Image (cartoon, rainbow over all chains, first blue to last red; front, side, top):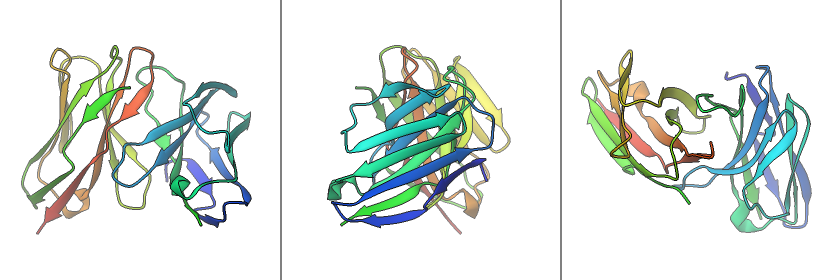
Length: 114
Length: 109
C-alpha cells in the first residue's frame, strides 16, 4: 500500500462511452499526476496538478479531461477514446513539485478500449 | 524531448550482483530517480541522486555522474523477489520528470 488508491482497477469501454477514473491519496501531498504506461514504452506524463491548479498538460488529446476538486482527489474523464488509448493509467502524488520529491504511485487502472 | 536510455532486459542468478545502467540527455538536470515496478503493481521509489557519487541503501546502491549523463543501479545479493522492472527517471531543468522505458530484471534460481 502506497497511500494512493485508484478505481476502477480494470475498465473495458467502447469508443463511444464516457467513463471516469478516480484517484485518491491519503498522504497529505499537494501535487498529483496522471501517467499513461503502455507496454515496452516509458511512462508518459499526462497532467500535473499542484495545490489543485493544473501546472502541466503534456499535449494530451482533449478526449482526456482531468479534474482536481481538492488536493486529495484527482479524476480523469474519458470520452470517445481510441483503441490506441488502451494502456495502464497510473496516478501519483508527491509532497510538492520540488526537485527531490519522490512520487508515490497508485496501482493503476488497466483500460481496454474496444 | 528528453532522451533516457536503459537496457530492456537483464537476467542474473540468485545471490549475484546486477548493474542496471541509465544514460540521459536532458535540458538541465535536477535529479535522477530509480523506481521498482513488479508486474501488475505500482512503481515504488528506490533512490534519488542529485550530486555525483554513490548512494547506498541496504542491498541497493545508485551512482550518478552528471558530467557523463550516467547513472547505475546496483542490486547485490539478488533475491527472487527482486525480479521486476526498474525505471530510471530524470528531472530536467524545468523540473519536469521523464522516465526511461524500464529494465526488466529476471532472477533465476
